[in-house]
Length: 299
Ligand code: GLU
Image 1 (cartoon, rainbow, N blue to C red):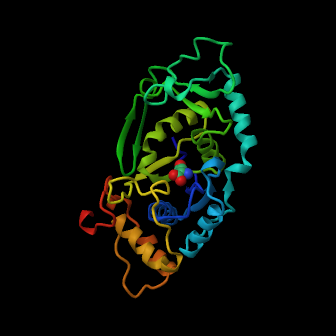
Image 2 (image 1 turned 120 degrees about the horizontal axis):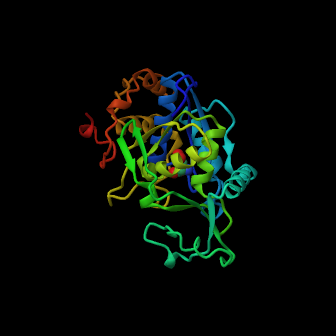
Image 3 (image 1 turned 90 degrees about the vertical axis):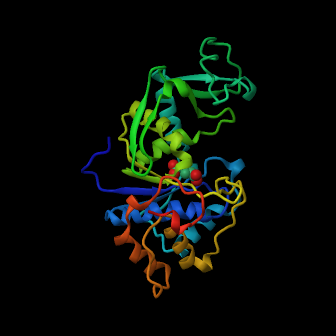
């Protein structure tokens, strides 16, 4: 459980696989407003852990774009590519504690959920290189938490995902490991992000418990979808935001989050954010909302 006395520290953690688009701006705006509304700090983390998926120049473009939208962070951004040593230490510690196992399964051998189901665990010494490092989840392990927007969440993690990858076969650290180590490193008390990551949260809480880290509050936002019903994302070629239209983009993000509409005369990004901070009300955010910025879907 988070320490109630800890000062609010929120974060936005983009992956530099492309420029900022409306979906990622919504997560940035919501995490920023929630932090500022609580007089807390707002941090940035560049999740540049997966070079094959990255787009050259995207990290800097994202930082510039955030600035153009008035979303200014309180500390220098944390770059995950500079944190590989820290992840290696934690991985070694978990391995020493007997929490990990090596898995050389090919994709075809894994279950539909990507689990090895202990196949490799039962044949020690015969795992061939390259291997992934997986964490063992006890079969009866369950995770329960209350999400601010999505409500009570219960996961039979040990049944649903008896093992998950912390270091990939290609030698890259997995998102689940890095995000947990870095949320703890940055002292994050509140995570506000898209509900496409809701499924990952049980895995992250499991790791936090194992490593004796505090668990932050979670708030998972509805995910913006395109006309095809798919999540708006860089993979789906969501259009990059036009930084010259920052005020309009912010208004669109606020409408999507069902927040009060800033008066028309507020023309700059800074003025719109200044209005939105005291008016921020996460209780107005619907758990799901399929139509981009559909005002009539707000309650
Ligand atoms: N890097 C992830 C993304 O861009 C977000 C991770 C997180 O907020 O935990 O989707």
